Length: 328
Image (tube, rainbow, N blue to C red):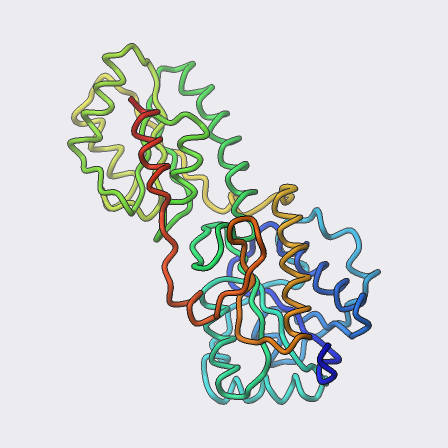
């Protein structure tokens, strides 16, 4: 164990996701296990600059593993994007005698940590927390599994209404740049069509698919749309287009929005967060820095932060094929 690290700071930044609290708890309790101090940094990099800190112990993180959101809060910091802001943050950390950081978040969070390390040589370790699952170097980010379950449950409820009124529902889910949520919940909820940024289905093929479903006897349909899908300008434009060309359908739109980020984390996310927190702290104590803790082939592994930031998560091609067969 490194003798130089006696106190570790932990923070959450960017969009919140279920499992962040479980990761905070894991970091604090791993620090306690190794008899070093842990400090919670409120409001991300903004709180780091302002010194908004609270000592975390094994006991005062009890009762948070089941809570969604983040008890440490999250905020965007324009000041940290400047050299002056990062200098303030460094001076504040040193005044508090914090020796290393565990940052929980996504691309923006990791980019800030990377730059901070390059400028000050400050040891940092990242834990991926975002429901979009769009971080390179891990098969699952914290909150992704919970979001999938939340969305599938919502679509199941929407289908009840769709079936009762013979309606076509476009259900928009999060996924500005990637379609991981849409593809998985589309298969899991039995959607008739799935629209994702990675696959340009095209309006004509969408109509053809819907007509085929109608002809086969389906009186209602669910189409799952990732918010970053490229077919139309937005999901409401898709609705108008389908209504214009398929007058037999009564079309509705349901945008699930931020409800996808909320809720108590699933067992999978709680266990994953616990594993990642232990690995992050112990890696810092072993002298490692500038890595992200991820899950690869069900093993906790380290990926250089730079690769995590610059790499691109890829959609599962097998799932696309499964989707094509299931929507036949």
